[in-house]
Image (cartoon, rainbow, N blue to C red; front, top):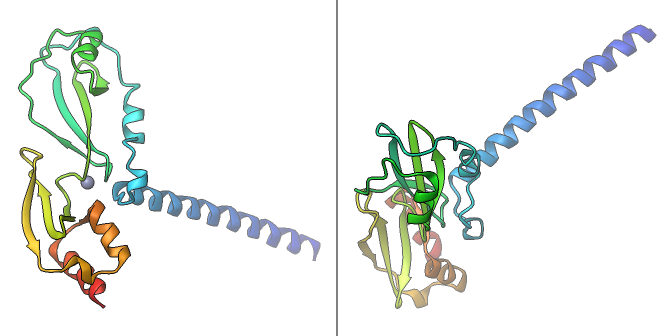
Length: 192
Ligand SMILES: [Zn+2]
């Protein structure tokens, strides 16, 4: 009798351990997803755990002729990064020289094969359609993947004064969407 109780307790404990492991993994997955789709502007402070980890990756005297150089832009509103075009040649430059010349960039990787120089930029990356109000007019904007410049996509026929204060405040700072369906849905909710 005692033996059976002991065994069942052990099984329960093992099950609990397995369940908490699973929960931990699930929580990790959720956190990971949240980071990839950061929409809360308060969290978009330019900090990137991914980059912080890469900074360790520094270990050569100067940029070799075969090193692949990536010029990255990190967008503070969503936390995403995009590569930009830059014709600067940095072959032969030391870490100190690169640091001095590109003060506005974070050197996140500096090794024989790869150099990554990242600068911060305000706003959302080219993956998002951003709906924003300017002078009472609501419009959709999207950055070009090639130039990273923000382009006006279309105006939205919705009068600002017909919206409640929450929607107005959101629209003033700009709201990111993945596609036009999401934008339509947002304004359907705003109307009701
Ligand atoms: Zn983004």
